[in-house]
Every structure is written in C-alpha cells, then in structure tokens.
Length: 151
Image (tube, rainbow, N blue to C red):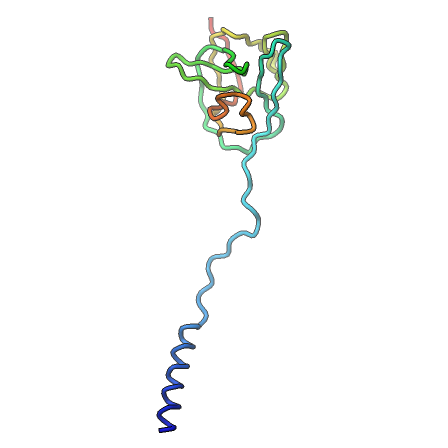
C-alpha cells in the first residue's frame, strides 16, 4: 500500500513538472518607449488679429503629400485657412520663417499671400494637433511647402 501511494504521488509530481516546463521565450520587445510623432509649431499673429501656424523645428509627423487649390481666408478665430471649391476648410501650417507684413503673409522665399487670394498649395496633409486648438480646424491641417497665387 505504501508503494502504491508513493507511485501515485510520483505520477502527480511528474505531471506537475511537465506543466511547469520552460516555454519558448516570447519575442523580445524594445524597452524604449514608443517614439512620439511631433510637429513643432508656433502661432504668429498680425496686428489685426489674424493667426498663422508656422513650423518651429523639424517635424517627425507622418505626411501625405498633395496639393490644395482654393482661396485663402481667416476662419472665425482668425486662423489662416484655405477654402476649396467643395467648401472644405483646412488650417494651413506655413514654413518656418513665415511672418505677417501688415495683414498679409510673407513666406520665407518672399512670396506674399493675402486673404482672398486664389492659390495652389503644394505640401502635405499632416495629422491633427490638439496643441493648435486655438484654430477650429486643428484636426484638418496642411503643411505648405510652396504657394502659387492664381489670377
């Protein structure tokens, strides 16, 4: 009887040992925190209260290249936007070094832009940025690389 009990205990111990056998290691994951996508920006303001969002450093945010065609305007908060023919309004992010000269914008290459101009804007759509919530369309942004005023 003693032998039977010892045999049963041994069988149970072996079963438990098999369950706790080492398993294959899961794939190693990086200990570094995920990198945050960043689009450093600043808001410059004209004497009349218009606001232009400008790049303020190198962006690591993903971009979707494209072109916007429409007319420049200021939204209800004074932010410079482009309104397309289909009525979509997009807040613009201008190149670093863009300034106001009076109520018109001057891009770093000297190109002047004013509200009401019909423009073709080359650049890229960029992700929404809650830091820019001063502009109602902070969720719809377009980073301007080049602007052409159309007659």
